[in-house]
Length: 236
Ligand code: PGA
Image 1: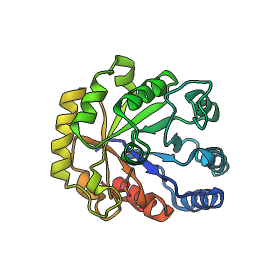
Image 2: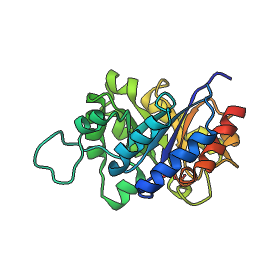
Image 3: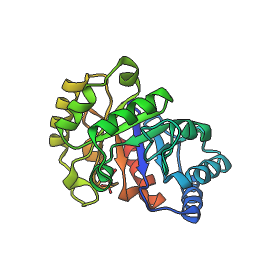
Image 4: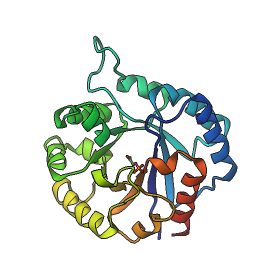
């Protein structure tokens, strides 16, 4: 199997400076390079420089990319509290999670704002990892899909009931949904799965041709849990 999975740690609002440094220390102790995965970590904005610095000190720059958990749909100007693409690339951020269901739910993020964010990320050559939980959200993305977006975008299918619940979706159902997503957006668009993925269940998803990565929340908070996931992927 020569597939390289994109495995993204979504730290959400869980880490501070100390935890970030501790996490990288522990991760570095046991991390093994593998052609089976590429790792990205998405911390809060405030932890981005801390994480990049820790990754540099641990000599992990080649192995671990840093993503943001959001990007402003606005470029520059009177938008209090926003963080723009130009600021993210200045730090060396490589990608951005867009439209996570928690943002859609708690911060009222709309398909329209999400599309603007996808375009903004693409403009700054950041990889947009766009979270969807239903086909209406996928259809909305299809309306802006230019070639340059299609070349960069990753779709993360995250069913609401599976997020943070300990009840992941079945691999069969994930495959069914990803087939449909690819019908809407095109076969070449990479599709990843997120929702209660951990070291105990990840192997169930490795037979699927349609899953090209994972978005991991809870099981990314402890470095050993995340390393165990990577091990399983390496073992195939
Ligand atoms: P979970 O979170 O792994 O805790 O289910 C995934 C996500 O929300 O991205």
